[in-house]
Image (cartoon, rainbow, N blue to C red):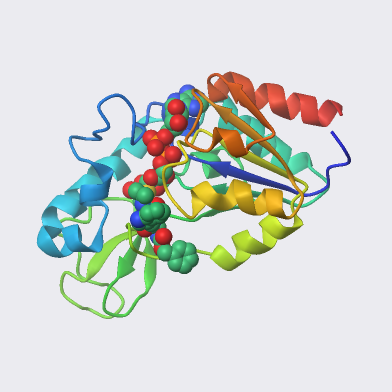
Length: 234
Ligand code: BV8
């Protein structure tokens, strides 16, 4: 592996699976009884707001019942110790990376523990249920709060930061994602275009495995600590 200075790490639902949080496209492809493409859209929010708010209320509540797993902890250690540039770009909306201690990270698809007001566009930390509490405390608009989540058809957050990091990366690592959702699924091609080495750590080959220089198959809780130890050793 030639000299590595700058690392970009993309994570998906698979890194949180061993903590007990459901992935999206596992067996049956349904998630909490819904196809994510049917409930994670502005149209669904307009069509059945209570259903969408309840769906995210249930997932927010589940956060209090799970803990980071060894994969989250290994990435947080790497973040703390890596002397070069490092950015964890997570598609996940859980807080397990933060709870493991990760600092150099961003949530490109939003966060369960954040609320967005559709009237004044303020973002607020949010821990409890949103159903029945959706009046904006900032502007007072009735029922205007929605989950601060990037739905299908909406633009992911901090794409400028992500694009700059990909352009500078010497190594791009994708962990626990099916490669089904863009633009995240295209990051490996962008990183390759700029000359980065690319590594995939996943329970099964993803839709984009053929783009990676190397693809390791197995659970994140084993593969990620092994990879971090290998990187630190090199
Ligand atoms: C956008 C919200 C424009 C949060 C989500 C046609 C072609 C290409 C693209 C499109 C197209 N038609 C429409 C699009 C665009 C669309 C898209 O990609 N659609 C797909 C369905 C084709 N994308 C968008 O609309 C995006 N916006 O494009 O805007 C734009 C873009 C850039 C600049 C300007 C304009 C917005 C996408 C965001 C949608 N929001 N969720 C939430 O509710 O959680 S997506 C949802 O899927 C989640 O965010 C999730 O993170 C994401 C990806 O899923 P994964 O994380 O990969 O999870 P999955 O279950 O699929 O896979 C888990 C993997 O882990 C599996 O491979 C499994 O094997 C593995 N695994 C399991 N256990 C383990 C494990 N691995 C290791 N260890 C384990 N133990």
